[in-house]
Image 1 (cartoon, rainbow, N blue to C red):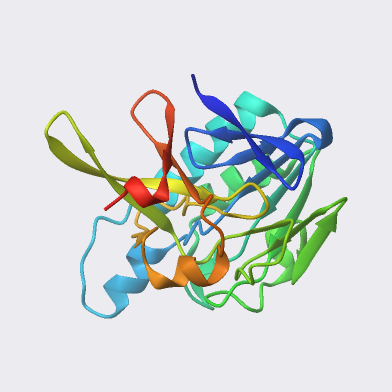
Image 2 (cartoon, rainbow, N blue to C red):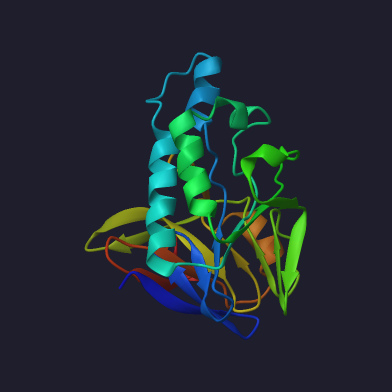
Length: 223
């Protein structure tokens, strides 16, 4: 099972095992926190990481787009790790991005890492987007019908006598926070106080990205 159904504000989405959401009725694919060129950003500060994060992230995104063939893609902010990261994209990575954007609408939501994206990346830039009862933005406010990113939710769960930590979708059925899609992105525990401020009822679920399927686990059962 590459995807599982998740309902947010009475809208049914497919939560993809990659960490993307797909709204079938709108043919809309949502991803968050790509953090492209994070490796090169760290290298500029003397922290050497293998410089393959952008390729890995774009390759996974290409596969998700091929799987769902969306009419529109919304990237929920922090698509680039810093304000200059887009300038460090290689020619081949720019070509990959352009190929994904062909024949479909593409919206970049501005994030705290990339508040001012240039027009030469293709697509359009917005601070937030509303479609029907759903509002897409980078930083979560806790509003009903909101799908946001920024916090990089992860969950630690016990299985077969050992604990496992994985990225997850955080949702209580009325709002959701997306997992980070980028190859080098870390995560924040779903038990952190930041999530308690957004999800104020007892229904918070972690839709955990497993090896072959998603696992819906009550946040209260996560460590």
